[in-house]
Image (cartoon, rainbow, N blue to C red; front, side, top):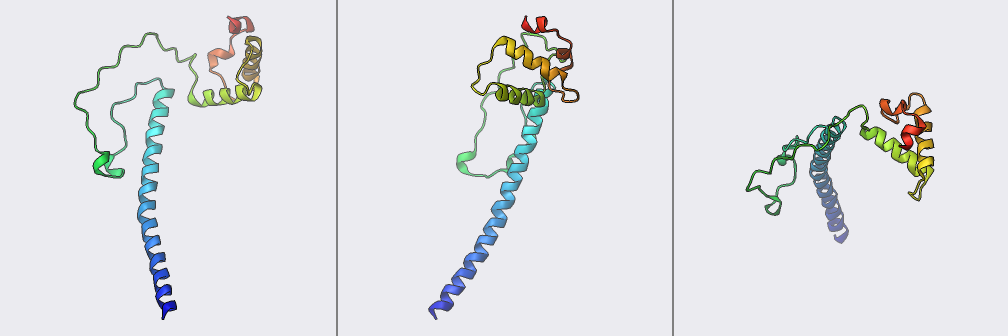
Length: 149
């Protein structure tokens, strides 16, 4: 009789685990999808040098709801100051280019200190790799003396 009770409890435990996993897993996957959407929007805004919007594409109803998680803004956020410098898209690195360049620099000097001459040589080598798109187009036209400046 004890074995029957234990077997019944294990079956109930298994069912309960499956139900909880289904409910929590679904919510977790939804939250992760929303985070991916938000990070994609942020990445795109950075690559295009656009200001981030105050609202995000993430819906609050998609996240866990609890008393401690509620918040509100009493005042409208202050307006962003005007940019101090003009953006020059031809010279700007995209996120992907920045990641590739960072990987190249870490591979060349893992300790994080690199001489100016070594950096110029590394940038020239990166510019010579066809099809890699490591650097912006305008950077490819620079001479070593311009890179040193």
